[in-house]
Image 1 (cartoon, rainbow, N blue to C red):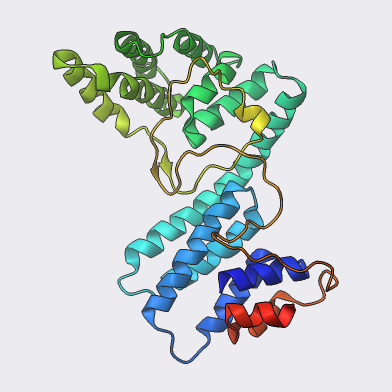
Image 2: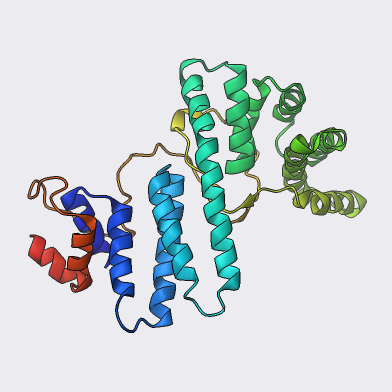
Length: 309
């Protein structure tokens, strides 16, 4: 059904999220809906939530998140799922507020690449939210936080592949965290974890045991990913120095670090979809999402494609 619904979204130029959620709600009004269907809808709305967050479509993400939360309450043994979904929706609210500052910093850097405040804001986001420390260091080195600036400069000067040098750099981040205020301590420990993680595979004996102990201690500082990172413009992603190529910090929970791309503003194509909507057949907004949803409910993919053709 997803292919058919995406076809309707593009054909009528209506809200993707409103169309999907209305269709799902109509489906849930049926007298008997088995738990497997409810779980399928929960999984689908969660996946589309993540896609919307990555593309910066926060209104769509809220619609999907609200639906996922209400649906999660209908699942058997749902306490844990309800809790994680609630936390995810709360994180969305925080991200939307944060994103205004991040986007402003990105726009500032596009015009003024050496702006210290914008470099710091973007560097922090890329490091702690995206989890791409290699891409963040060049920006942090241009930032106006003296501690992060110094550590980033030391990091950039670290020889790639030199495990001993990577441990020394990790120790520098660790040492800085010991005297830092609580607000900055976690990001400094995350930086230390990044360097220890790079060095550890090449270590052995006491050196390896020491670094693994430090990795355990710093592991709690890794960002807990309730939601995936929102994509940045490629002009910002391209600021990662190719020569550094040090790797990506591991993350936990929803989402993984991914290549950053410019949000297109268009609904993402359904995975595996080969359906191309016919052009110019309807006026934008000619049908409301709910009316479309009601139409979809009784149709299979092939039928709706045939009727729209």
